[in-house]
Image 1 (cartoon, rainbow, N blue to C red):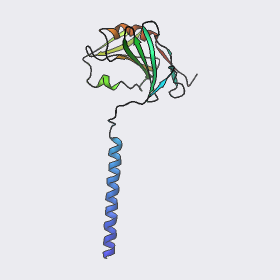
Image 2: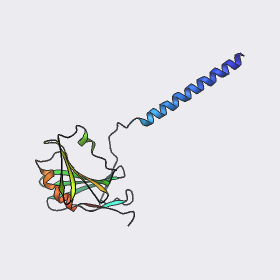
Image 3: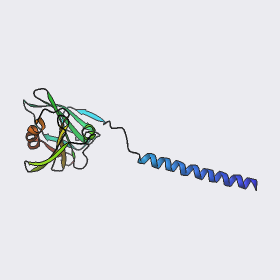
Image 4: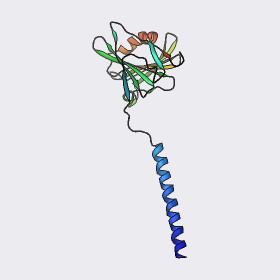
Length: 176
């Protein structure tokens, strides 16, 4: 009788431990990541065919807007860093529609002002904090685009929106 009692108690304890372990695994699985660092891979050209299946077929490149670095973030978002003469910087992110990762430092405090307007037949959304972060986003041919600057000059992003929106194109390469 005592042996049976110990056997039943052991089974109950094992069942309780199993329930606790399952709950821990489930709760840990659903806990969002607090790590906001992105995995970036630098490329020589904005052709991400082998990993992401797309490339940037066109983007501004002139004496004022100079491409500097090409990245692939988390194997799905392209980012090009540009030098804007004289001595300013902007970045352009491109991803398939629905997979865009907004830069976290742009969205931490929200935006003071948001407005929508049309350029080249596309609806453009501009978000900004005066003297701080500014971003412009649009969608074209199955790709989302975000043009942003962390330290913009007054109206710099708005002034450069037209050349970026009209001259930037991404295209699928897996199906080519």
